[in-house]
Length: 164
Image (tube, rainbow, N blue to C red; front, side, top):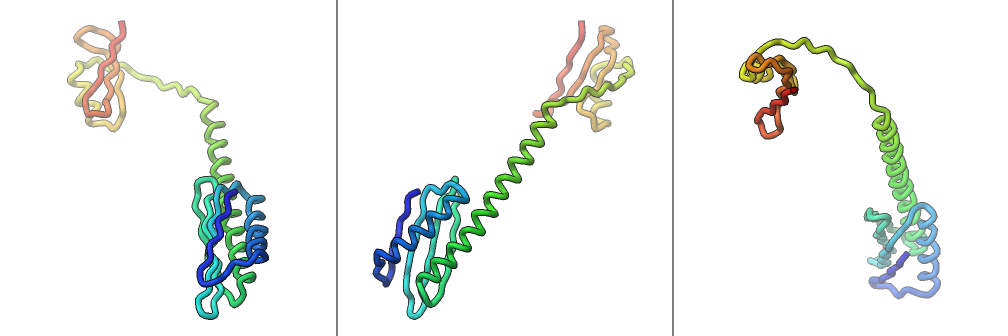
């Protein structure tokens, strides 16, 4: 974890820097953090702690204000902790869903459908396919008496498969 602390209108003492490092390092217990940028600033009576971090490719931001800088750091830590826990829960939920999907894919089922072969020409099969909302049609080609399959391609054309 790479921690960058910058200050604006305030001098960062060793105690303040150590406290910030201690609090932000606790966030690594929740998830892997690549980099943390902390900006401590003072505007009139407000002590502001602004944090941006990169956790596994996700950018998480939080900003808190109080009358004491240590309190602001505590508040921003709590906010970041909640955000990271929610982010981790979402990733775990996605993994569970993905795992469930892969389980169902590994167990294919064979569904048998009965086709009655209607004798027709390829042109009649095209018209029949256009009328119905099916993706293919199986028929007996009257021109050569072969079992044929006519299907619609993604480019709008039709494909014809004939048996021997």
